[in-house]
Length: 158
Image (cartoon, rainbow, N blue to C red; front, side):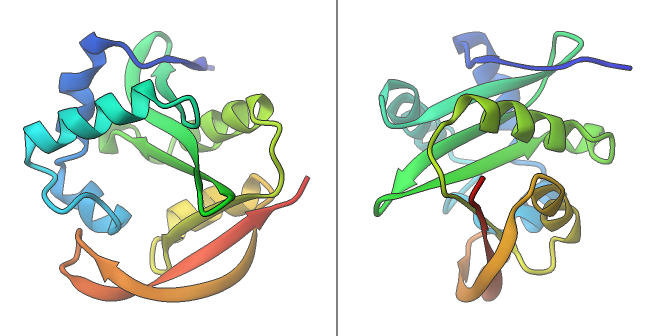
């Protein structure tokens, strides 16, 4: 079986992460993305903020040493939240679930929250398998869909 691992994001990862974040199907599924996923200057500025913040854990996800995405956690209004992004070419292989499990092993904070577009069944399944439970829904504007959509909010206590 292929090995999923996490490591710090390196400068050499940025081009690939930017490309992954512009994939139209991935953007549509994730829904809650930056205003313009094709804006490289905004991407670079955001990644610089993320990588320099002591309050953010951001890791590259590798499969047998090959970069296939990223996973991270951050604090919003006192709540720790997780996020992940896997290159669409690698969807359906359990990589997101394994990366999330590895991240959660290194993050002692509980509870941890996650959010996903309510129609993103694959992401919701990853989160439920990781032990997250649905605690509510919200309607918010999703840049990836250019519309207000329902977002499911999940919580992990243990």
